[in-house]
Amino acid sequence: MTKFNNHTAIVLAIAFILTFFSCSKTMSDNKKNSNTATAKPQYEITVVQKGEELGKIVLELFPDVAPKHVANFDSLVSVKFYDGCAFHRVIPGFMIQGGDPNSKTEPREKWGYGSPDQTRVPAEFSNLQHKRGILSAARSNDPNSATSQFFICVADATFLDGKYTIYGQVLSGMEVADKVVNAPRDQRDNPYDKIEMFIKKIK
Image (cartoon, rainbow, N blue to C red):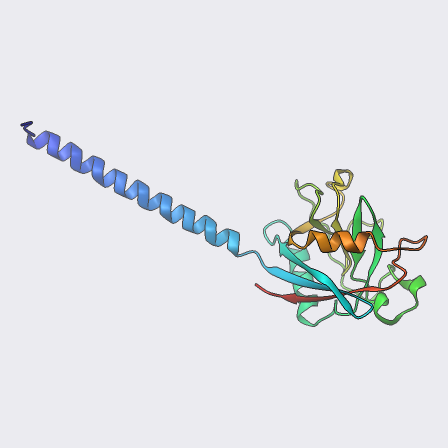
């Protein structure tokens, strides 16, 4: 039978303590990372055309990447700003765009131009790429002119990287975005039959 002296016992005790705290730290770090991952806000877009629901798109936003854009989007959802807005620009192989208040009740020729009294959000460019499913802020030629309009990429569009602010991604419902982008449209890429959105926060 092997005999242990006091020195060996002390070494083993220290090794046990270090292993215990190492495991505890790993578990704590994993829990912390998990909490951080689940802290991202989520929203559900119900897509409707001619009174019939086409489906739902669930978004996850990136407050750590573009906090001002996320805050702006959240504030607009909270007052039901987006409800009744249209996806007024749909381009197969590229993206679907919507969120213009003009698309609620104004004539179609005004859709996409926004309102001059809307809050403008300064650019928050990042190293993220415009891949399929990415949510990004639409804007005019001025990089700091984003307001309420957004677009969802239905295909990779990395030529937009570093030029438009990415602030979220689609978690589920890309098949619905595909329905929207493939809707029959006019020469302005506007669906002939209005496609509306209704957005609510779910997390």
